[in-house]
Image (cartoon, rainbow, N blue to C red):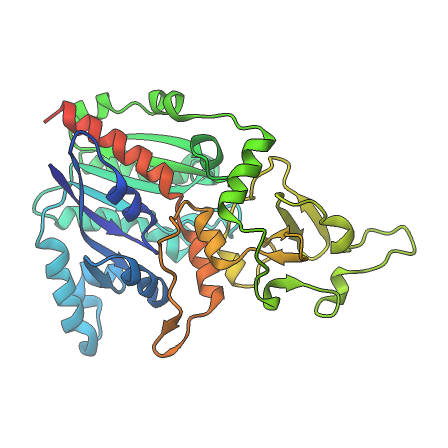
Length: 369
């Protein structure tokens, strides 16, 4: 059986790909539609998926009367499309910057935080509620505003008639992807028996692993090719960035990348341009969207040729996207900017974690048909 999936805030399709890859006893998932507002993310999504992509503001799709006259027809069509097919699972990695430690943490005061309520509004419009809502966000969501933010979210979901479970997983513990990425996964079940059968703790015990340094090196080698020298633009050199190669004469705190980034198969961060930090877990630190917007949290490596930042495709691999996942090179007849790819990778989910949870969900469906 193929269970139908609709995806809100789809980004470049990490959640979609995890569900697409999940299988159990000949059961799987069929991707029916996805929604995303960012035109660059949509281009990446369309390059890799062929089902219906609704490009636009989800609030206008839900309520076309919010539109200006010139765009109303477009949004009325998407409104009909999103409601015309019953789905079994509604997924949503709703915007997390409002709750993230890496963001401003304004919560519902931030417009992006209020986008959570569009999930509630959409489900209220559906002829048949999804059997499961599968939501993902940053770990800090639970603690934000002393727990009040998550209480509002959970209460709103429960008012729809769902039973809610949540669990924080770290990508580096649950998969062989060497990235420290803690995220909360919120599963909402309309069926109480589904809720009872789905056991986060059992899943954690089944999949959690402990890796040593050699394991991590092997995992990193699978993602980063240290035998090939990338384009010069990815390297940090003294000619381009003299302020990152300061020669200390006064015993003061300073940055000299040549002295401080020396080990292969390790990841480093240049923090606020003031100091260098090596990741203590032998994995890549959490990838963030501000990699593509001039932020300070850019992972650096020493690859034997010099010191460089990660390549765009390497950041996608560190989210578990497979080598065959295609990154676009053009958009509207212009070169596709690396900055958008870095941003997309930072905003994405870890595909193997999604696949694990989607597979375990299939086991629940199989027991409760």
